[in-house]
Image (cartoon, rainbow, N blue to C red):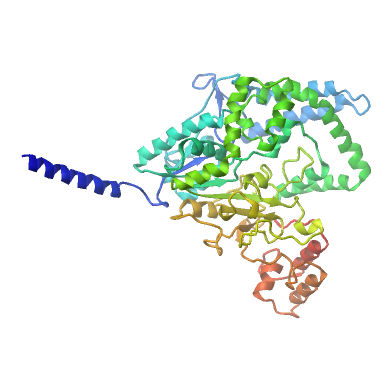
Length: 564
């Protein structure tokens, strides 16, 4: 009998051991995907679950248009009351600030880090394929839907969360959600796409739980190191720059005639110093004068205590923001809530490396060559919402609409690691990134402009389905470190050349000689080589024409130009 029991136990042990190997440790391209989206991706409600339930923060196009109308109208009305002669800042503030507060008060926090209202939201615990079209429109952003479309809707989940809360607290909820998906799918690991503020949540998760349950993780347009928008807001650096406004409108137009016309009008104003000084100068003076009222009556009582916003303050601005918003001292309770993410943010590299040791593979994907939202006079490289230097954890960037050659020097890569990490347009040196071998950049792509059909999601999906740790050298033909998104033709082109855009004669610089050679090619006097087309076909129509010659002259003359 004892011998029989031993045999049975041994057989069971063998079976259990075999099951351990055949249990659903699914392949990377079959693992369920968990998407952790960005700020305002989950709609929050006051009086959630009651007949008085109401959306706390605008989410639909109608609400956004209503806010722009209300707040924009109040801003203009405030300027009228301010008067160019009276300079009545308080009258400006009394008109403008209440209109602004109406939209932020429902999600407001006290300065001790506690919410003023209890907020609720709909939890999304089914795969995307299980929701109706009407439910999808309410529950999910375009990033979630487009990624699910590309990855597989029946294998994709979206994590819903209160983005006003501390990311460290939300990370505990993410852990519960990941374990729920693992149980539902019967697998040990999941893939994760962390978008924008979702990367803040994901980094907090990794700091606490490590990477043992994560197969592949992609940080898309990550806000994990903050953004200068919030940094400037929380340190009082608010200023309207006419050229930044012009740049923003031009780059945001994307074939919109109305926006292009507006940009042209602003460009006309900016071109005349008198008009620029008279109108935008006075507006800036009004903004600077109303700032004390804006901070006293709006930003400090409504936003300064919101832990979610504090997680978007860059580390370099963190202590200065505390002192600026709370000159008499920050509330200890708020400080205890926001300090933990500051520690996580500053230790991001080690946290990810530790997760990598746990078996997690990862990649970082972001856009560049967009004008930051023009609320300051800065011209940092960005995707309109987050600075490239923060998304990449330290890329060296030329200013927007400039390149390294504009600094009067021949640029050489800062971190000489044996690989080329300088973009073909000499705007980004990725060698100084936190992870230079795992960071991909797409020129002209805006913050949330990921689409299943135009190529902007291709690298994200490729990384999510990786069967090993991919780098920028793994597939340089299809997924090089730098790509170009043509906003007119709506497609992404991998840039695999090491030459300089416009350098048709391969001299190492772009000048009129390149334009002359391009003109000869355009007129049929010289036959174009593959190299000529790579660097000279700037509008990407498959040949070198007089249009390309004009672009090359713009580059040679350091004249700002826009190629979609």
